[in-house]
Image 1 (cartoon, rainbow, N blue to C red):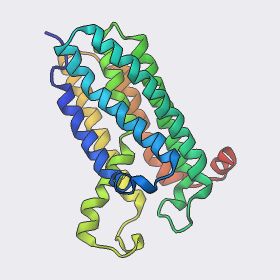
Image 2: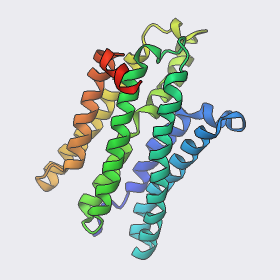
Image 3: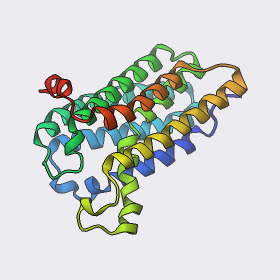
Image 4: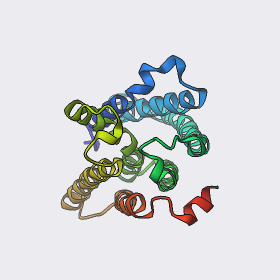
Length: 236
């Protein structure tokens, strides 16, 4: 039996959460700047390919899976380039009234690590394309490299409904608090996958271990470094 027969169904959940988290982009689609479209559309199309790939693997000839994989690779390139461009454009233009302003440099550092990890995961998924178990986990790990921006934004939908703030400062917590809550949830999910693999295969896959370490480190980077002088120097 081929592995991961229901993976496409599990991948739909983070996709929907991310879409809802970035609902502001879709509702303001016509007025959004070009660099938003380049990133938003390429990331959405890439994720659609990521969802349908496991289904194709199980239900269609392998040649179709490989052809869609080539398209996914092209889209991943646009995702990476557009994400780097977002950092370059957004960092110097962030409003001082933004809740992200006090941690803008550490957040950019986290984004840079995430983009690098995403790139590495895509590259190693290609390297191990003929090893289904390893290949699939590198592709799954790409989700966790880019998941937090969508889940954090999604979290503010129910939080906004509960607290109904007129300004962000009316929330009884900081943006970093919500970021940490989301990171803890992501870490727990990755730990679950690692434990499940170990119980079934007596093996810990490097793809999951790497993304686990990164997400653990994201918390002290955001909460501890904030806008440290060396980070300012690095990005400026």
